[in-house]
Length: 436
Image 1 (cartoon, helix red, strand yellow):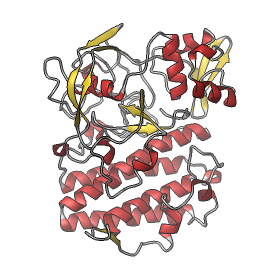
Image 2 (image 1 turned 180 degrees about the vertical axis):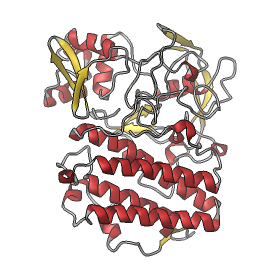
Image 3 (image 1 turned 180 degrees about the horizontal axis):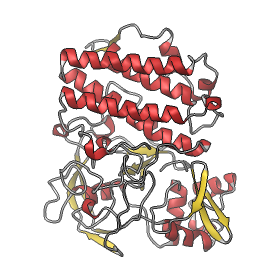
Image 4 (image 1 turned 90 degrees about the vertical axis):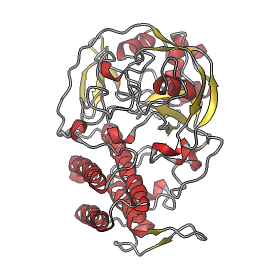
């Protein structure tokens, strides 16, 4: 993360104007270029791994996606859209992730880093000129936000890549050292019928959030804070990775296949756990929210702790409703006020997870802290379509992943605040350990 602070950034809002769109696009690009500056000269391709992209390819893909939807796409009632010519020759064959297999991205004749960075600049310049010329029309507003959110999601993934490949951290500034009241125990959530998912008046949402539909949520209890490193260490030290009874069948097969004996970036040094962050090892911060734990590990921990992961509907109920008003949904856990660093540890904050008792201003109406930010939260549910699902123009975003990914909610310390709302659904396969 760099030193930019979201408290000074406009939110995407429900219907952002041209100036807001431009500011958000510029902020996203600033973050992209900050990542590019972190890539060592010898690592523009990096090693082949299933969970990362070659950095050089990914930067070009960000530019291509923005050009494709903001400059080249022309809606057509019968054919679903026609495309203008690309600014870079052969761009579709290089950067269209829908047609370029993941393993092939290391083998492509990619432009050099300076050419790729120029492509990023030229595309944004052209998008900026179009917005300044046409204003925030309904069409351009939608696709500018699509490109913006896509870029910010890749920017978050860049943090994952830097961790996975052990790149040195740059431009990190600790902004928040927050001490708040100590929360313990569970929040009692009354349950009831409520609308899971987004409504048309919510502004830009992805197709997997469409549309809101009534569900029944039974009363339940939810821990008032996230699981900490210290709590998870107790599970590890109690033999959690050796006890078959704690693991589901798929989880145990995964554990044996990778020989997992602790979370990925943990190591005992002098009898104490240390955590690797990018290229540095440091003592475990026992009260910070644990990260880099996959769904299988999270599920096994819950069995050990005699708890369970929340259902997706339970998570959204706890984040979006209030006692006595479950039919009115909040945009954020604390209400409808735009996110600031007081509410959540999101991008622009500490650059790592903070104490789970921090950010009291972001408490939900049910008394649950940090439902937004700090660490993504696994839910029990598989990622599937809502009953009224209809593909958006970017048809590859959701549908190919239904049924084999798990849903995560809430965002992490590398998530830009403008991305999030209570209906946002993230999704990863249950074996992914790089999730922040």
